[in-house]
Image (cartoon, rainbow, N blue to C red; front, top):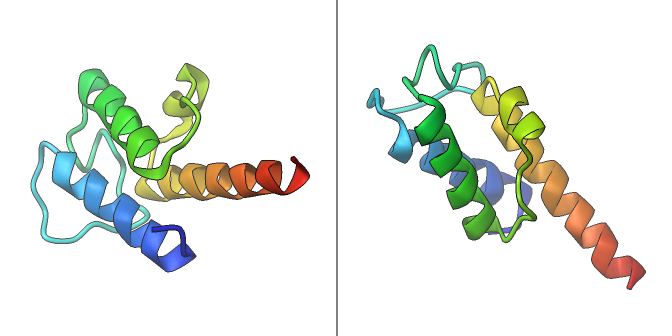
Length: 91
C-alpha cells in the first residue's frame, strides 16, 4: 500500500474504522476529535495502527498532537513514507 492514492485510501479506512462516531465517508477536513469522536486513548491506538500498517517509525507525542484533521494524519503518513524511501536510497 505504498502508492500515494492507495496510502491515502488506507489511512482514511483506518481512521474511519477506529472512529468512535461512525460515518460512511470521511473528508480530509474532518477533525479527529470534534468530528470523529476520538479521545486521547483512541488517538494513541490510531498512531500505533498507522505505525504497524505502514511500517513507520514511532509517531512522537508532538506529532500526534499536531494531527488535528484527517488531512494532517494523511500528510504525516505520506511524509514518513517519503522520508523512509529517501533513507533507503541513501544507504
